[in-house]
Image 1 (cartoon, one colour):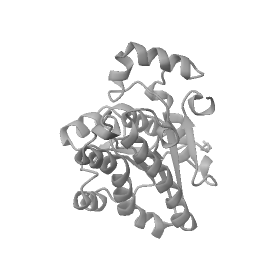
Image 2: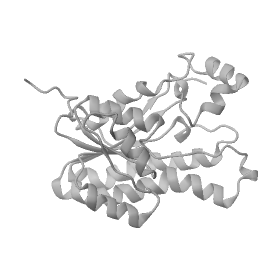
Image 3: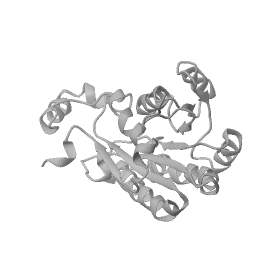
Length: 247
């Protein structure tokens, strides 16, 4: 049987922050395309439980913000063909009310961890001259709203980190691209989903007129993880119902 360009059979992937939300949906999409997928989170029991629900998945629990833990995990997990840097969080506050510890929490998880994890897994990709790195950016990589300052700063940095990975590693056969979700229904956005005023604003603001569902993000990641994107590098693909295209 001929394999199509989106077939990930025989590929090994790792998705950070994949015990819930968008990360879990991404892991499922990669598995559905044929990949063996590492399920990551700080909670080993949660990683194992989620891995048990996805065919071919395996638990890979470690703290993505801990340099030593990441290095140990890279040695234990071994080579991966696809690295999806999804781990993230947000704290919604006006900038003047944000503490330095809160700033560091959001930047460390959304931006610094992507550097730490990519740096740990990239050397093997470089040696093999093959690898796919997909960062999960955001429409906030380009746009800003009140109370989203630290998240927008971190995701804007992640966009440029993605392009810097391309600049450094494309010559080694690695493709580094980002997917930038708009507003999706997840545990992270549940407070906004329940906010009647915000929900009404979103439905007016997004050309598609609705929230995204987690499973609608998977196809973009599968594309960037597959051979179909072998000459795509340093790009950010927005999956936002058209939000970033209109004023």
